[in-house]
Image 1 (cartoon, rainbow, N blue to C red):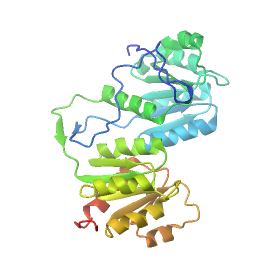
Image 2: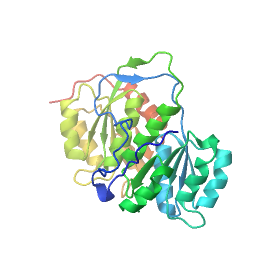
Image 3: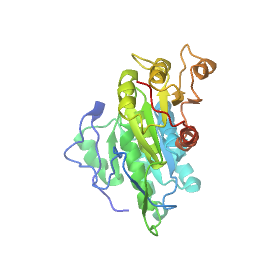
Length: 306
């Protein structure tokens, strides 16, 4: 695998370091709702090994990787990770550097010496943000990311790796989105994951950060939106309150709730409010797409009420 300039994402959301520019191949999550280009049967799901001695960080990252549809395995030190690589043959390693027993740098060096890992993408995810460490470890990794890392950045790198490992397509073709989806969630990374994932599953996607914005987006695009996916707990108008308001515009709108914490609500209460489904977080994108596709296909063709 040819070595590319290490991508460095600044701490707490600052811009990428000028010294290490991101690879030009890193794709951006698509923000338009136009025709979707795809290559049938070209991409496969990735095997991703996450290595970090801080278990909460590793577990959270594994949850995200699984939500994006990939297989994720965990190791909490470098020695355990090295033992796992032989049988697991990961396509991607997301490596912390400062770990007991064997650090991420020496683990990466050992893997680089083995030809069977020549196509494996090695990504350092570390708290070492100084230039000296970046220069020292630049040759061992394909990308060098500084904690905290934006989930969208990791997702882009995984998409890029899928493209690298994909078999040459016979003939790329295009398909227009068949259903419209409104995603309402106050967490940016959730909106980003669902935006990219649902577009790949054939949805045109609009998003809103809260209930108030959702009402405006729904009204402007009401003829195209078939189903609404709502987080339950949000500041301002929460999910159930937003659904009540949207139903004043269109009593027959199809809605699905998602949440990792229902608060004072129960699933039964949410269904009584008119939700067709309640999806617990974390979830797999393909499972969400199937539920939403079934809801959208049954949406009555009804003009919202003025």
